[in-house]
Length: 130
Image 1: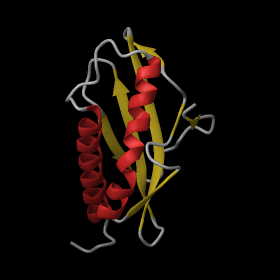
Image 2: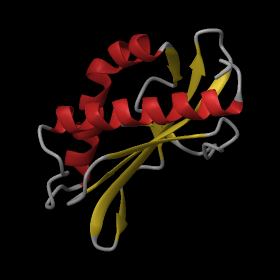
Image 3: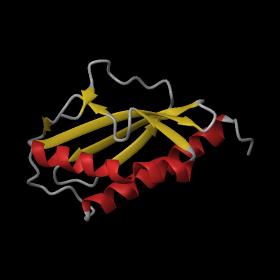
Image 4: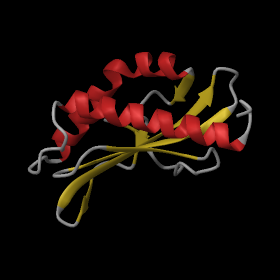
C-alpha cells in the first residue's frame, strides 16, 4: 500500500481512532462513562484524556491541534444523558492533514473516538474546555 494513497490515509485514521478509544477507556478506568455522570464530571473525564496525548501523538506520528481532545460546544443533553463531543485536527509528521478527531463522551455509554477525513468541519464557535 502506497504511503500517500487514500487507503493508507484511511488505515491511519482507523488505527488512530482505535488507539484513542483504548486510551479513553484506560483514562476512565472502565468501559463505560458512568451513567449518572453530570456535565462537570464529563469535563473532568475529557481533561483526563490530555494526560497521555503526547504519547499517542508520538506513537502514531501525528500532531493534534488544538491539543487533544480539542474544542467543544460544551456539555449537552441527549436522550436524557449528558453528552460531550470534542474535536481537533490531526496532521501527519510532514504537516499534511490526516483527519479530524471527534471524541464523544456520553453518560452510560462507552467512550467513542472517530477520525473523519480532513475536510470534516469543526464548528467555528466551538471553544476549549472551561
